[in-house]
Image (cartoon, rainbow, N blue to C red):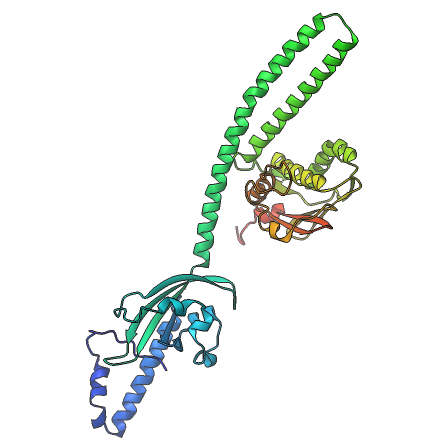
Length: 396
């Protein structure tokens, strides 16, 4: 039954005055009173069930006397089962929070808490509990407001994560930029050594030194390229969108990586149909995505490993599937893969997948990773087709 919700000190209504004269009412008056009570009950039910927040009234033992529709949906019980339910069972630990606080003044919050529910659907709920009693000498009860703050929590967490990533990328960009100075110095001194070496009399020893200098110069050039690509990848700039065929980009990356895959003894298989629908994307950023993913796959495999690439499409999206036969990833590590500086590789910097995820998000795409230890890893990329990015409205 709906509990009396009249607050202490509130001016009595006309219905309260009628109830005071209940013993003097005749049959017709009682009928009118019952009808009026039913209307007011229906009105209160309608008002409470239209609220976005859940409303509960419980006894001191935690038994639920009343629950509006939102509360029943959040907590997960039907109306007919609500009377038998106790809040202590539904929210473990809440009863302990009330111990020693039974003397709390009416109208003042007794408990404010946030907790996570996994049934009937995962959500984060904020609970606000206030004690009250039903008239003078009435049994103590508690009014409880439940608010679903899942979206609020998710938005806050995403904001914090975004700010953290931005700070890390700014720091990484600064470090990468500073590395350019010693590389420039190395380049200059290697050129000076090379010039002096050419003035010396040719000999077997000078030829060997010339070869070593050439190796050093090549490595400096490679490091400079890595830093340049890294800075380009992590700068928070919007993609320069144009019509792109992902198969062409994948083939370019594979050609560039062919020497490394051959040296590692890795076999590459692919289904790359030339007729794949075009997408709107930044060509250079997509190359960065595939470079990072292919590098991860190759480093996860031993000689004799196999890398499979499949490109497909449906009416709305283009899909790219990269599967390797590497060591796989532990289940507990899967949720951390996109965290900055989290890596499962010795010597890895932990930024590769984070950059991939950012680029995919900026393109309106999605990335999914499945992995099993000892079997391998499958990465799936999904891009919206061109017609999904720009669609005319009817009548436009």
